[in-house]
Amino acid sequence: MKIRWIVLASVALMLMLPTVLFAQAMTPEEVVTAMIEAEEAGDLEAQIALFADDAVYSILPPSPDMPGPIVGTDAIRARREGIAALNAETTTEITGVDGNTVTTLSRYVDDDLRSLGLEYIEGTEEYVIQDGKITEYTWTMTDESLAELMAAMPPETMPESGGGAFPTYVVIMAIGGLTISVGLGLTLLHRRSF
Image 1 (cartoon, rainbow, N blue to C red):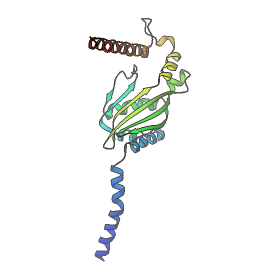
Image 2: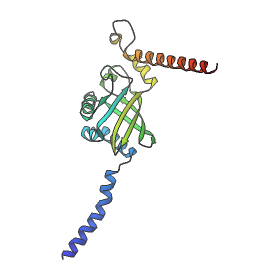
Image 3: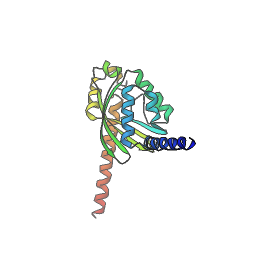
Image 4: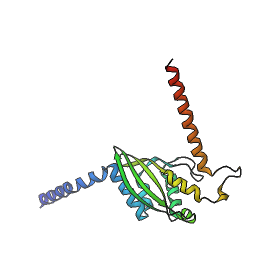
């Protein structure tokens, strides 16, 4: 009788072992798929569980409510709670997997965007996965969505200086940086030709 229990326990362990090992070895694409499913279900705890403790979370271009990256699951939880409070809806499609990096195309809308008359804004997400956890997350708004958002912004959101809204100066700074880089590159190229 004792041998029968040992055999049954051994068989049960052998049947469970692949499941346990598979759960620990999620591929980067499986991690992002789990994130998409957790977002669709509105399961904040499942979302946070997919991030590494020191994960870096970025939104581009920066916004007044998130001017730079945030780090760690506590900050990410607060950000995601704020998004949920705005009745956010996201649809996401995985568009590429390159090693530990997964890229998606997503459409996002919340109460604030709806109040501006926008159906959604579109962006790309880049997830970097290490050991089954998201270590870096970057959401980048498309140029088209940025232009639509800027056009929908009410005049009272413009700074008193008369300049453009916040994201406009980010674009101007990027163009300026690109211009300087090109100028320096041409200068170095010109010097080499002598």
